[in-house]
Length: 212
Image 1 (tube, rainbow, N blue to C red):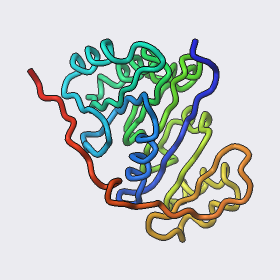
Image 2 (cartoon, one colour; image 1 turned 180 degrees about the vertical axis):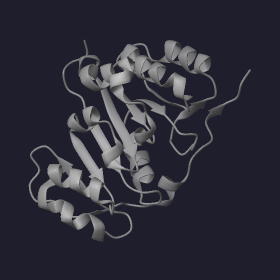
Image 3 (cartoon, rainbow, N blue to C red; image 1 turned 60 degrees about the vertical axis):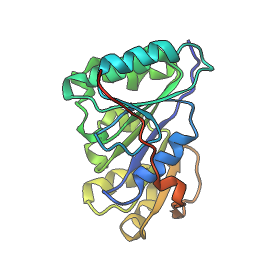
């Protein structure tokens, strides 16, 4: 067991709102990260083209709580359960779900349900990015410890966010470019924050690993 503490971060916003840039900044501050990408290749991580290469790398480099790795793989739909399982087996890491609203309903994917409901037992945090909050699994939304939302316009999305954030959600349709609201348990009044942009945050080194 790795302990009982873990984060479940939801980063929400439309394409171009800044959520990927913010996620890159957060990922860069974490030492053990597994990214279920959506073929965007925008994260500071070593990219793999096959599951076998990813599994082999983690087997050699993810042993021990002090080891460092940031890896990325774009899974096919039938490979989603593997991404959840490998994070649980490795433990003490952050599983990043790019376009999390494309993932299956965890009620019909036991591995996904397990990592959401019981990931804390293995020290697995989740960072889920999505376009539409209302389409994220309710099980994942209920476990959120932090919600970061850029501008929102869809009534269903604002309604759910208002149920969590309260009156602060009324600001969401009027947020400016790269502005967001950040909610976490116990937070008081929420004011819009501005995403810090710099040249380093926009650059990405090519870490892709070619097929043999």
